[in-house]
Image 1 (cartoon, helix red, strand yellow):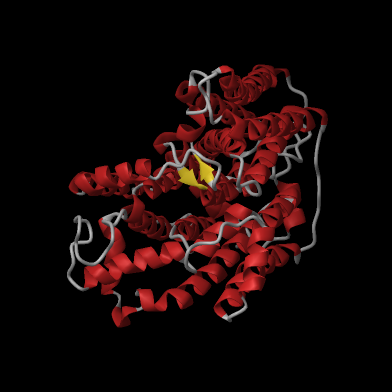
Image 2 (cartoon, helix red, strand yellow; image 1 turned 135 degrees about the vertical axis):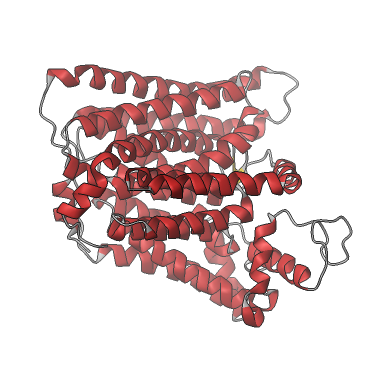
Length: 495
């Protein structure tokens, strides 16, 4: 692994004043301003819904809406008035992130499993993590489906005789029943859940190692935040989706000048897509493969395989989508999503959220265009890994929270994949780049801690994801032009 300080210096956005950049700088500033205005407008429309005399629920969410307005204004103000943030941390800091993640997730489970419920419950309450009915609740539901399928039950049928309700997971999930020794069974949930805690913590450690200093601090905060710990406490299979993104980026970073890591990444992404459908969005990470010789075969093959799977399992896709809609909670209980927030707005709910996402996307594109306009092909090649991570993570987040309209709080974990890219922006000497990076990083930090304010976390989440998607896709596309040639000429330090 390369020295983080040296890596930061090699990719520092030290862009001299150049009149040719003026249109891009003005465009980026304009999109940043419109994005901020839309975020504030969404919260104001929620507050204005209290003017409806028949709205009996306003008293419950208005305090949270006022808090959301104050937090977003503060984040925007900090981003505008802080010119640049350059923080260095020691090499061991990333290990601290991984250790804290595992300890804070493992100790409550150990307390509950070891007959000391007071310890586990107190920690969960203190960190505002809603404890499941049973330990590793989500994983247990998945393994029940796998066991029932192994025993010959139709797990997608009503009153199937094994499950209380039809399984909401895609058919690919039950393929794990064919793995020998029945490792994936409800009887092994405890072992599997702890293993998922460990692997997830290692993934967070790697993200910290490849992030700039302030990004590592945000990841440490996320390691003790409700969304991340909720993901680990439930042992939700979204953890595996995050692992796939990290493993794919790691392989591409080290061996990306050849085709085999792209093939492995495409297979892994496709497999988790067959579990829940929306992880297919990670396919955006494969865009740079188009610049390799016959790389288009890998990308087009992935697209055809993904589309074909959706078509073949169309009825299950519709059922899964409907099940997701049926789970929408309009309260503030670890909930994210366009739908629950739009339901509280006086008008224009869905339109405002899609507008926020699109303008934030354009904002990210404009910032990325400045970066690629003033960096060499060799320098851009070092950004490919961070760009595809940001694009993939934000696409998965938006697929659930913005497009589908609902997601539990642990969906915020996917925005952590954008930190290696965004954390490098805040150290730029170009004010609009630094301000943009800081506002997005603050949004991810808020998203990584707050659980109970649906209005706040959904708004800043869509803002951050839209920006990261635009910036990631643009940098990956431009950098990929000379990606293969640069990898052959310059050996990039392996992570």
